[in-house]
Image 1 (spheres, rainbow, N blue to C red):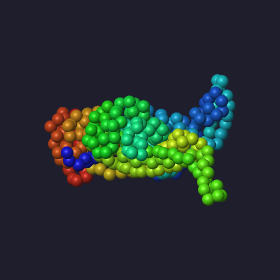
Image 2 (cartoon, rainbow, N blue to C red; image 1 turned 45 degrees about the vertical axis):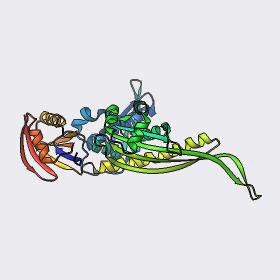
Image 3 (cartoon, helix red, strand yellow; image 1 turned 180 degrees about the vertical axis):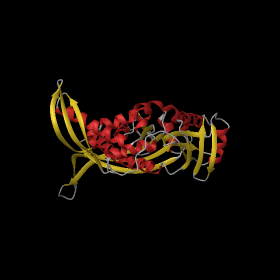
Image 4 (cartoon, rainbow, N blue to C red; image 1 turned 120 degrees about the horizontal axis):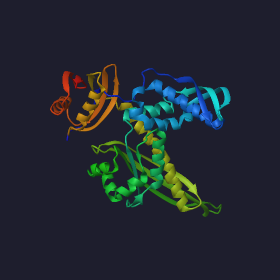
Length: 372
């Protein structure tokens, strides 16, 4: 198989951030609740919903990103920089507040990062599997502490399609996963069974020993404390190709009063650090997701856009299709394929019932129009 290319076809309808960079937006909203705190939470959600509506294509929120956005709205208070209550009263037994709320929309704000990654990566399905090994390299099973910590961080970032660690553990044999970690090509079958786009696959090792301190007599006296050490090496693989798109290693220590608890604390600390490194990797993926070929298509017919996306998905040379943007008669669609743009167009023309006119093809741009 040839090297995977990502082709961005300009004719979709997905969430797109506006080009303007806004540091913050202040909105005045109403909130209702059983008490003042719940009314303020309701107002925060209303404010974030209103601001998000100015940052993304509102025509696609319900159909394409309702679940993902709802996860963001549930964390609305974390995106608020400042809040001023303008008035407060009771309406039909509920507390009503009118508030001026400052929503943080600076480029590095948590809200913007959530929206960017969901948009650029199309909220992929991610499976996290961390295998626990002993000091001789034997697989002991799944490191549930590490898996849970990393999954929690991914969910906090806004990814809503994270495969439950228990499901991943029960579906696959640890020895098979270890072979894949070592370079086996059997990753495709696991991807289909887990229904995932990315596999975060790692190995962890941990050990603990007693802590001794100098006794002032030239020797050492054991203490009640134990020192735990843990290390982790992680690979991020793309299921459709088996390609390693990221890797990192880290280590951590912890102290407790038993060997087992010291080991578990060290693993937990290593997992937190791994989750932070994984966040950096996915931010890098999202920042580079649009560095691809583009197909510029002119059509006012969104149903033609949807049919074209379906026809592309049906082609044997296409791994994935993401609808991106549709406005002013122009749309964007991203397609993962192993073939050149010319071959993709020829294959599409032989399968689709749409009328297609090709205006031009270059190394990074395909221009066309479609009609039903």
